[in-house]
Length: 281
Image (cartoon, rainbow, N blue to C red; front, side, top):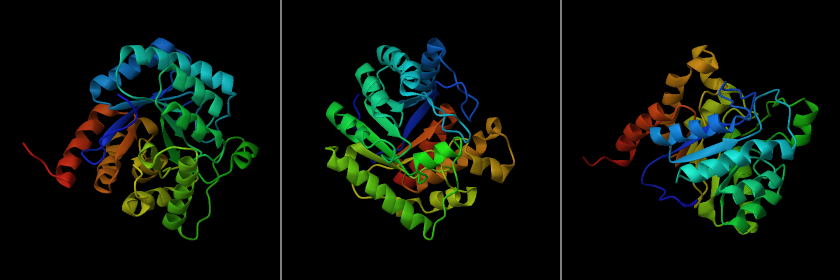
């Protein structure tokens, strides 16, 4: 299966495979290829429609890693998963060099948490490969983040939803200029990235306002800090809160959700879809 989905029929589930030693969610598998492949296959068995493989942590305080280290973490996992499963594979990276190698290994989606603001070449790499590209909203410039030792400063907004939508539309325009058709440029509002818990919740509540015509919408609420803040629970105890956020994302028009706990979120999304999109026994 390639990077094109029958959008609008249901919400698709992106399962997370973290090949990092320092994931914020506590599920990082480091350089254990077999463990990462086993996790990916288990997520597919649980109902994941696609897998997102990442080799650089995006948690606050994480130290950026060189492209060669990141590629060494993700490329063997993607190649092994490509041989073991038929679902589309995504590489979670902001580096064109890593994306190129991951696409050659069998990925067909590039998930850029910097929305092309760190490495604009990613769009051309995805376009040449016939891949899809996720552009996430993430306002802090990479240089500023590096100076802060990997911390994500909270951005100041005059009009949160309007500015996030405008910046997503700008990233989408850059991707289209590189040759990607709109249906292969997915937008992600970036819950928790440079945003306060209240701002993340406002974006989730007003999700329909973030849509840009022709572009699929991906939402990643899984185990995020706004859930922990509301429930006063650590990362490992946020499954129920994530379920609530996933149901709201589906109701708000999300085309796909990115989650750690695939099986319960598949069930949540199916019921939410049945209510929102209609259900035929």
